[in-house]
Length: 175
Image (tube, rainbow, N blue to C red; front, side, top):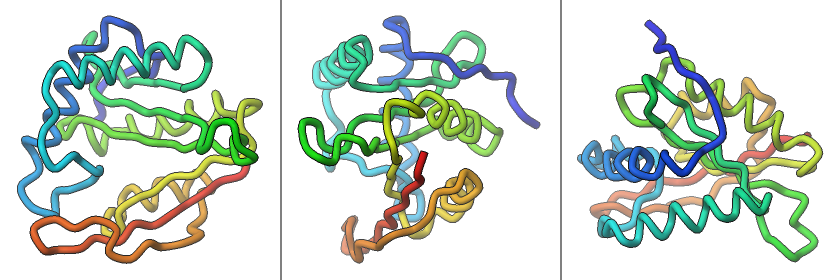
């Protein structure tokens, strides 16, 4: 059953929801089979997370960052960002897409809707999107392929957790 959600621009009121959502990834991380995003080895403090949110929100207001959230019952339950891969260089035409959704709202269409909206908002701002995904995240890989993303490389043993390695797949899509 799908949740009723909407995709919208992140707002100031989303700070607490997004910080709590990020912290929830640490709670669900039991072993490498549950790892879906790259986390810091040590859970950041609330001051660091508040600074992270307001820095990104400022960049959004300045047009340097696309910052979308899926909203369910008035709460932001995930985040999708697109930012210049390398600002001020000859690669700034490439946008780096990142996406994460709170566990209880995954596999219900929010990821699809976020990517669809991110692509729409990236058109005219970027010529190409790229992303990275863990090699064992087949659901995400298949979703990205549905939107025309193609694999262009693999970084073997990119992430090391508890002596286990996970390779990262690089994907891109022309706009």
